[in-house]
Length: 263
Image 1 (tube, rainbow, N blue to C red):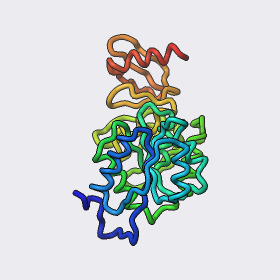
Image 2: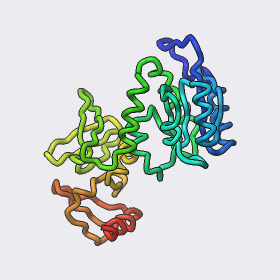
Image 3: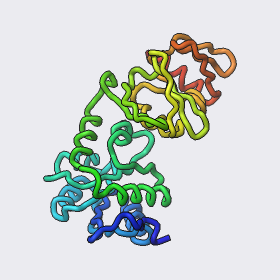
Image 4: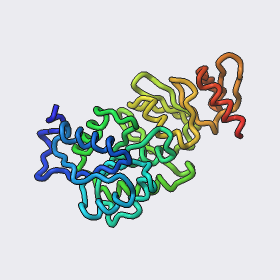
């Protein structure tokens, strides 16, 4: 298990120097323990618990990688990125589903881990870093992240959707809805186009939740901008602009009615 991150095709001359920035001391120590025991090729060179010490530690140690908690006692992880001298390290974010910045993190970070932290998810995140460490320009990666974090509209926002043959760059505001197809997701667009993408619907719920999308049912994620009518009878039924009829799960109905009341 300790050799989980080893790959014959990826060899490092030096350890990947890692800093952990986490507001809870016990959680930070738990992350460090997982890295030590299961993440081959990484070494923890420092731990910080707030923005001030995080900035100081990064500027001093100049790490290769940082695990960065979004919520900190004296600010956010984004404040750290604005204050450090050089953002030339790779990032794995620690966050929660309620974070407004989740969409930016999902668009641009190498990976993100949801609290409470799952050991296997953290190991997988480090495996991704291990695989791309020498292949990507991290400054370009962070520029994309900063753009996503400051963008408050979805008019020009694009995401990459990978099908079996191609990678499609599509505008978020042209997506009408997404429908689960097992481990795949079908995307339906306002021009009538449909794409089958090789990721499950949960991946896109986190990605699009900050852009007016609503998980109406375990099989359906919809863009609220394209709702034409809502039938309240039974569990509820949403009529979309593409003539589709989307069922609403019982536990989602109250939330949807609340959204309508706020319009």
